[in-house]
Amino acid sequence: MEWVEVKNYEEMSRLAADLFEQQLSAKKDSVLGLATGNSPLGVYEELIRRTAEGRISFAEATSYNLDEYVGLGAKDETSYHYYMHDTLFSKIDMPLSRAHVPNGEAADLAKECSEYEAAIAASGGLDLQLLGIGVNGHIGFNEPGTSFDSLTHVVKLTESTRNKNSEHFPDGEVPEKALTAGLQTIMNAKKIIMLIFGEEKAEAYERLRSGEVTEDFPASVLHLHGNVTVFYGK
Ligand code: GLP
Image 1: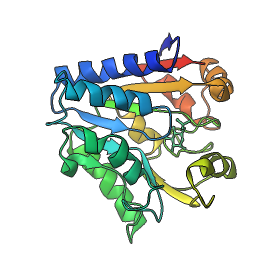
Image 2: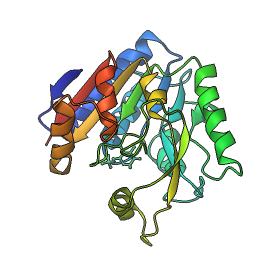
Image 3: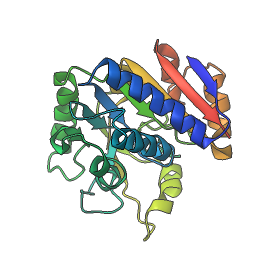
C-alpha cells in the first residue's frame, strides 16, 4: 500500500481528486466507485470545481456507490441517494442514468444485491474505488466479521455504527439494516483510494498501518490488494 501523510483536509482532498483527474484523463468512460460520509466531501468539491473549469468531465463515466440504508429512498434527506445527488451528482456532468446507488427500497433486497453486483461487472468492473473508514474499520457498511469473499449484500448495522451515524439523523432513528458492496466487490476494483482523516480515526489508522490482516478489521483486506493509496492526517 502507498501511504501518503497530508498536512490538512484540503491537501488530502486535492491529492485524491488528482487521482480521479488522472483516471478520467486516461479513460473517459471510467467506472468509479463512490463513497458517502464526511471524508469524501472535500474530494467532491474539488471534482465539482475541476468539472466547472473544464479540466475533467464525467460525461462518459459511470459510478457505483458503496451502500445505502434499507428503507430509505431518494426523497429521504438522510439516504445516501439524497446525499450523492445533493453533494455531487447535481453538480457534475455525469448522466444520472449512469450514477448508481443500491436501492434500499427494493422489494426483494437479495435480488437487488445480486443485480447490483452484476451491473458493476457488466460495466467492466470498477476502475477506481474511493473509500472512507469507520472507527471500527468498516468499509462501505462491511462491519467487523464480514467475510473477505463477500459480494453486495444486506447487513445488520452494529450499534456503534448506528450511534456514530445518528448525527446525520435529526430524529436519531438510524435504520437497522443497509445494503453494501462486499469486501470482494471492493477488492475487485483496479485501484483503491482510502481517506483517513481526523483524531477520531487515529486508532483505525494505527490498526490498518500495523499490517495485521483479519476479518475482525474489514479494512485490513486492503493489504491483499496491489494498488491502494491511503491518505491520512489529523
Ligand atoms: C459510513 C459509511 C462509510 C464511511 C463511514 C465513515 O458508515 N457507510 O462508507 O466510510 O461512514 O464516515 P466518515 O467519513 O463520515 O467518517
